Length: 79
Image (cartoon, rainbow, N blue to C red; front, side):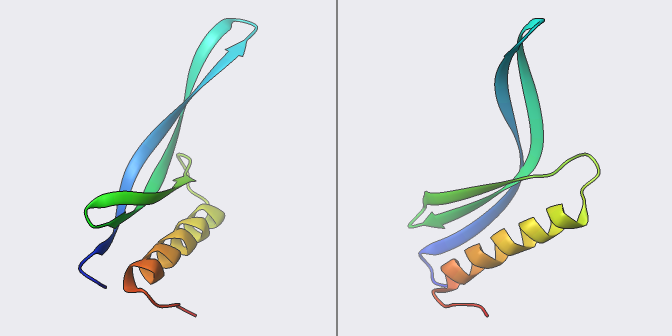
């Protein structure tokens, strides 16, 4: 990994505002944010939704996003 590029993984929730029959409501989705940082500044972000009971597909999506970000931070392609 170079000194300029870093990858951060953080538990993060997203809130979505929706209007419904009962009025305005905010729905929260739990997830994990994979942030690519270059020169101390965020340059990209991928958010992976993860439910209360994560599935195999949730795990695979996170691993794929993390692998891509680590490849980016190392400046080489990971097969």
